[in-house]
Image: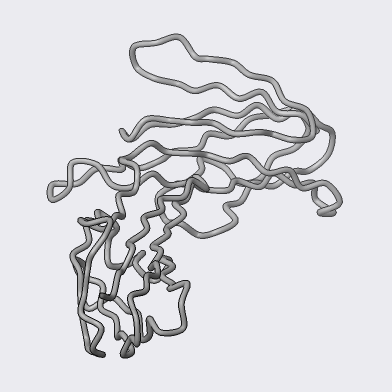
Length: 203
């Protein structure tokens, strides 16, 4: 089964790309639009969306022999936010017996994820205590559960998000000057990771 993919816009000629059994990736703008996909095969074939993302739809989900379907994708913008984070959908084209199931990745542009400590180094007293530090982030609340946060020392404990703009943590008492790190990580839908490291010095 092969597919020819054409990205259709109002003011440009379609860009045609032909793939074999691996259908590859299409990257589109943050605006709404549609992509036409020609299927070259024999027999019944089906089209579906693997992750139920809710922002793509199809003009048809079943065909026979050589044919085509169109994928419609929503805008990745809103009245509240000019552009959302980048996102991706997995479109599966399969034969009737499911023996062949190829995946087409539709990547829609948006803003890159921002996740960083406002300071790279902070100095704190040797006494134990509860502390917090500021964070800059554009990751929406619905995706904040995918943020990974971890210390590299056992004496940095109870690390957590106090809210969307602060990271809280507990320090044990230090008998001498020491340092350790807290790392923040977030991987967006395109598989690109944002990482920030805070160095904590007790002295």
